[in-house]
Length: 182
Image (cartoon, helix red, strand yellow):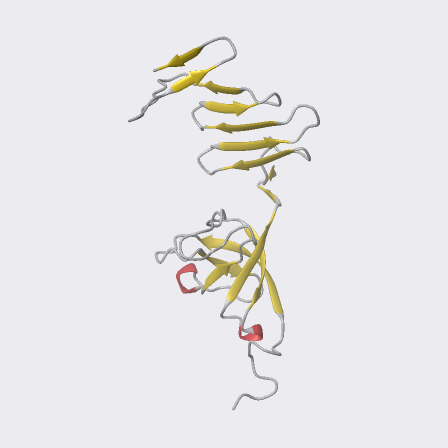
């Protein structure tokens, strides 16, 4: 029988934490990380930390192969709660906390109020620029190749390497001046 003060999912005590991601290599690929929850797991070596489930936004279905994976990296600071209350063995990560690491801002320098940016660990960059009258979407490879759609719906591809277009079907390039079928 579960006592009134026992940890439980229903009517249990809400226990939250702030912590640092220590491991992202989830061999079962279940979108989990290991977090050193400050004040709870101090002194516990990383291999012995429990796996924390990463809560995803409602725009990620997280069902039968649909959805997305988290983008946390080792060293990310996170906030979460323990699903099992004070027992603190079943952590859920709710979000990351942008801070400064080694005196450097932990969000991409390209970001701003109007420019929403995702920058990968390798340096790939996705930018959604919402600047009024200059809205632009761009994807930049870490080595410099770039695809841009500007405010006038013009598409450009910039690349210092080789650009290949392969198709088993017809490739049609249309413009207001000329149509070319390759």
